[in-house]
Image 1 (cartoon, rainbow, N blue to C red):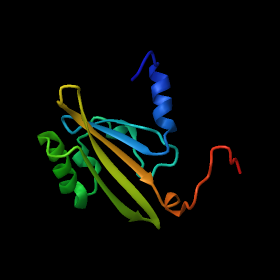
Image 2: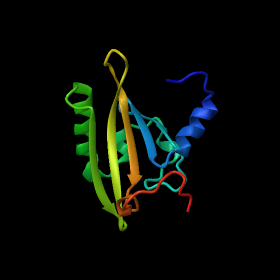
Image 3: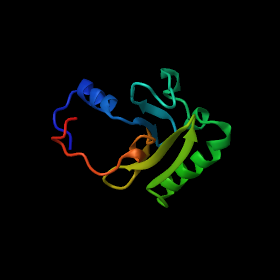
Length: 130
């Protein structure tokens, strides 16, 4: 739930996330991406308004289209995959965004470098500030 948050606060919140977030609207146009410091997949403002198919490598476009079509048709609500990139394990998830009535509004792409997360063992409690 959002209550009385300013645009600047929402933008800062999304930029603080330790993941890359992009949003593609119901017409497959890129409408948003956060500025997560050192991006895995750099984006420029020039991609805003472009069709998402123009923002992916040729070899992955057909897969992206299949995922978006499956969201639009209601067959899926999420898709996930991972790739090795420059010695790092990159986890990419697509989430279908729908309104309260179930109408397709677009797709949220979340990308995260999980290389170091995979190395975590045991537990670390909140108060263990080492």
